[in-house]
Image (cartoon, rainbow, N blue to C red; front, side, top):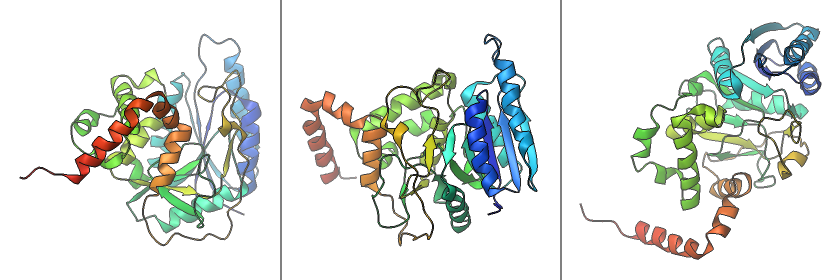
Length: 315
């Protein structure tokens, strides 16, 4: 196939995995390829050479393709480099598909994203298209479902959605003081988990050094939904490597096989799949463990929540 949707490719200092993901991109021959690269860290001997070797892989483009590069000469870190890279891409195109150097896509990942970008191009309810499904495979008989959870292992979106992104999360304190959190979270532990994360990111985004927590907040603050494929379409090659930034430790998500989505069956309704979202929180973010650690209080909290929704005070 020849992919008409632009592809954004984020690379750094790992030529081996970059080569593999580049080969997958080369199979679909995108007409535009945006390459975003971070610069070497001055305290890491030999990293400059690894960065140069990784960047040279892009010279292997041998199909009709406009290649645009945004190579930083200084190290910005995971969060700022990726956020500024996405800003750069969306300043030039209306929509794009993104892969990092260790997110290896299934062949139908690209066609799935392209189909979703076209179908929901003008539907502002949809802000993000996930590539991976690590916790809810087999959840629906359709080809995808709608979720509040944003995953960043291979994804796609539109400029109209990305305009709400703010690396500094400047509106968080105002949002936190409203009752809108209760509209996003049905679960006490889930709410507490994300409030803590967002507090940290608001105080200092580089404490965790990532970009996607801010993107999750941006989507939630706009009541945005994500599309999650019924099959997992992304394999993460970065687990348990010495150079891994976030994918460390024994994790079931490191052993995901790649699925296939060809003939797309669309869900009849645009409604969030709450059961799938709860399972995502339990399996990916540790919600199940949080409840088990707090078992004596779980039933009390559930009863209080039920009581609160049964009665309202007179105006």
